[in-house]
Amino acid sequence: GLRAKDHGTPDFDQMLKDHAHYVATLRETGAEIIELPALDEFPDAVFVEDDALCLKNCAILMRPGAVSRMGEVAMIAPAIRAQYDDISEITGPGFIEGGDILTTSREILIGKSARTDAAGVEELRAIV
Image (cartoon, rainbow, N blue to C red; front, side, top):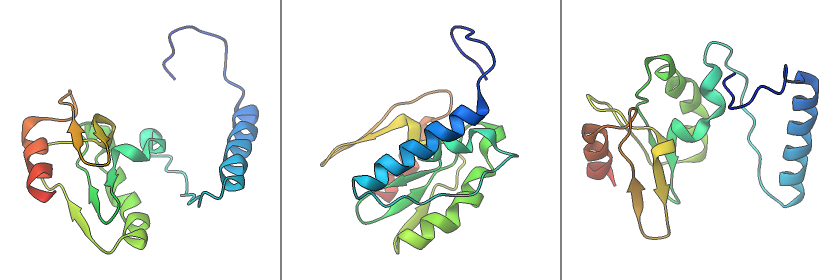
Protein backbone atom coordinates (compact mmCIF):
# COMPACT_ATOMS: atom_id res chain seq x y z
CA GLY A 1 0.00 0.00 0.00
CA LEU A 2 0.91 3.66 -0.17
CA ARG A 3 2.63 5.14 2.86
CA ALA A 4 4.50 8.31 3.69
CA LYS A 5 7.50 6.44 5.09
CA ASP A 6 8.63 2.93 4.22
CA HIS A 7 8.86 0.87 7.41
CA GLY A 8 9.31 -2.38 5.51
CA THR A 9 6.78 -5.01 4.52
CA PRO A 10 3.69 -5.03 6.75
CA ASP A 11 3.29 -8.07 9.00
CA PHE A 12 -0.06 -9.52 7.87
CA ASP A 13 -0.33 -11.95 10.80
CA GLN A 14 0.22 -9.08 13.25
CA MET A 15 -2.41 -7.01 11.43
CA LEU A 16 -4.92 -9.85 11.86
CA LYS A 17 -4.09 -10.07 15.58
CA ASP A 18 -4.42 -6.30 15.98
CA HIS A 19 -7.77 -6.35 14.18
CA ALA A 20 -9.06 -9.19 16.36
CA HIS A 21 -8.01 -7.24 19.46
CA TYR A 22 -9.72 -4.10 18.15
CA VAL A 23 -12.98 -5.99 17.49
CA ALA A 24 -12.84 -7.64 20.93
CA THR A 25 -12.30 -4.26 22.58
CA LEU A 26 -15.29 -2.77 20.76
CA ARG A 27 -17.45 -5.73 21.79
CA GLU A 28 -16.37 -5.24 25.43
CA THR A 29 -17.86 -1.73 25.26
CA GLY A 30 -21.19 -3.20 24.19
CA ALA A 31 -20.88 -2.21 20.54
CA GLU A 32 -22.59 -4.48 18.03
CA ILE A 33 -20.04 -5.56 15.43
CA ILE A 34 -21.20 -6.65 12.00
CA GLU A 35 -18.39 -8.34 10.11
CA LEU A 36 -18.66 -8.54 6.35
CA PRO A 37 -16.76 -10.96 4.12
CA ALA A 38 -13.59 -9.72 2.47
CA LEU A 39 -14.00 -8.43 -1.08
CA ASP A 40 -10.74 -9.34 -2.76
CA GLU A 41 -11.79 -7.64 -6.01
CA PHE A 42 -12.38 -4.37 -4.09
CA PRO A 43 -9.35 -3.75 -1.83
CA ASP A 44 -10.66 -0.34 -0.73
CA ALA A 45 -13.93 -1.88 0.51
CA VAL A 46 -12.54 -1.82 4.06
CA PHE A 47 -13.57 1.85 4.03
CA VAL A 48 -17.27 1.03 4.37
CA GLU A 49 -18.05 4.60 5.40
CA ASP A 50 -17.59 5.60 1.75
CA ASP A 51 -20.34 3.30 0.47
CA ALA A 52 -23.26 4.31 2.69
CA LEU A 53 -24.33 7.23 4.81
CA CYS A 54 -25.98 5.69 7.86
CA LEU A 55 -28.13 8.07 9.86
CA LYS A 56 -30.34 7.42 12.87
CA ASN A 57 -33.48 6.46 10.94
CA CYS A 58 -32.30 5.89 7.38
CA ALA A 59 -29.37 4.98 5.18
CA ILE A 60 -28.33 6.31 1.79
CA LEU A 61 -26.24 4.13 -0.50
CA MET A 62 -23.57 6.28 -2.10
CA ARG A 63 -22.20 6.39 -5.65
CA PRO A 64 -18.38 6.31 -5.42
CA GLY A 65 -16.41 8.61 -7.66
CA ALA A 66 -13.62 6.12 -8.30
CA VAL A 67 -14.35 3.62 -11.07
CA SER A 68 -12.44 0.96 -9.09
CA ARG A 69 -14.97 1.26 -6.23
CA MET A 70 -18.27 1.33 -8.11
CA GLY A 71 -19.10 -2.33 -7.45
CA GLU A 72 -18.64 -2.05 -3.68
CA VAL A 73 -22.05 -0.52 -3.01
CA ALA A 74 -23.88 -3.52 -4.47
CA MET A 75 -21.81 -5.83 -2.27
CA ILE A 76 -22.48 -3.94 0.98
CA ALA A 77 -26.14 -3.12 0.21
CA PRO A 78 -27.59 -6.36 1.68
CA ALA A 79 -25.91 -5.68 5.04
CA ILE A 80 -27.24 -2.11 5.05
CA ARG A 81 -30.74 -3.28 4.06
CA ALA A 82 -30.70 -5.73 6.99
CA GLN A 83 -30.20 -2.82 9.41
CA TYR A 84 -32.54 -0.18 7.97
CA ASP A 85 -36.12 -0.07 6.73
CA ASP A 86 -35.70 3.32 5.05
CA ILE A 87 -32.98 3.21 2.38
CA SER A 88 -32.33 5.56 -0.52
CA GLU A 89 -29.69 5.43 -3.23
CA ILE A 90 -27.61 7.98 -5.07
CA THR A 91 -28.24 7.02 -8.71
CA GLY A 92 -26.24 9.64 -10.58
CA PRO A 93 -25.13 11.12 -12.80
CA GLY A 94 -23.18 12.68 -9.92
CA PHE A 95 -20.84 11.02 -7.46
CA ILE A 96 -20.58 11.16 -3.68
CA GLU A 97 -18.61 9.17 -1.10
CA GLY A 98 -19.33 8.98 2.60
CA GLY A 99 -15.73 9.80 3.45
CA ASP A 100 -16.47 13.35 2.28
CA ILE A 101 -19.40 13.65 4.70
CA LEU A 102 -19.45 14.69 8.34
CA THR A 103 -22.65 14.51 10.35
CA THR A 104 -23.52 16.28 13.57
CA SER A 105 -26.70 16.01 15.61
CA ARG A 106 -28.30 18.63 13.36
CA GLU A 107 -26.24 18.98 10.17
CA ILE A 108 -24.79 17.03 7.29
CA LEU A 109 -21.59 18.68 6.07
CA ILE A 110 -20.30 17.62 2.66
CA GLY A 111 -16.93 18.41 1.13
CA LYS A 112 -16.50 18.42 -2.63
CA SER A 113 -13.50 16.43 -3.81
CA ALA A 114 -12.22 14.38 -6.71
CA ARG A 115 -14.78 11.75 -5.64
CA THR A 116 -17.71 13.93 -4.59
CA ASP A 117 -19.10 16.39 -7.11
CA ALA A 118 -21.82 19.04 -7.08
CA ALA A 119 -24.39 16.74 -8.72
CA GLY A 120 -23.83 14.09 -6.04
CA VAL A 121 -24.19 16.70 -3.31
CA GLU A 122 -27.45 17.96 -4.84
CA GLU A 123 -28.88 14.45 -5.11
CA LEU A 124 -28.10 13.78 -1.45
CA ARG A 125 -29.61 17.14 -0.50
CA ALA A 126 -32.84 16.18 -2.29
CA ILE A 127 -32.99 12.90 -0.34
CA VAL A 128 -32.37 14.29 3.13
